[in-house]
Image (cartoon, rainbow, N blue to C red; front, side, top):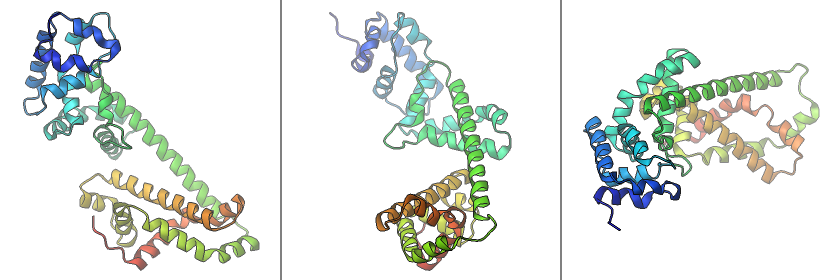
Length: 304
């Protein structure tokens, strides 16, 4: 049995068991050379080793009864660009920004109208496409080349727009409900007021510890926004990111502070779930004021 030719040796060892049929393609070397030539011609400024791309390709090939025809039909240039972006090539990421992301705007506008909304969706999509989270590869790594990259990105952008719109609607409802609950007429029940007075020091300590446990960036962004009064746009300029990203940082910081405060109070106090709920009932509405006071008092001066 003859040994695989040079390019084939870079692909075949990485094929999944169900895709071993590609190793038997008689013209495999020629087909791979054509795919690489097409990719390099499309993106001459992108620097990606052939070995890296061919392994990436092999890991995404699925079972087929016509392996040569499947290989020849692949959008090689699109897969090559995606691979380079996933591996952090700056030229590839710039090409994605210039040639692909602007094309999704029309699709996004049909789902989530408005220039700011479209800009936010594109920013969120870009972060998901190129950023690893929780040990998982960037979202762009899930593009398998089963169609044009532009069409895959449009579908991903529409899903992102729908998710953001639903999230915004849920947040608005939650804020309305919290505000309504916090402003119910009739005053505070004496037992509830006694509970809050008795555990005020415990609550303040738990809140301060939860704030201190935040990553420095989230704590600094809270200080810039709540104490120094910087707008989301100004903070975005400081960190060289979109205001929607800053908004998500702030929301995540608030959520982590609330969760940390609840966790610490649960450990310290022997309260029923109902009492703990009552103690923390108004916290979401008053959180920014409490955090502002703490940040101003502690004088947290860590820079971005």
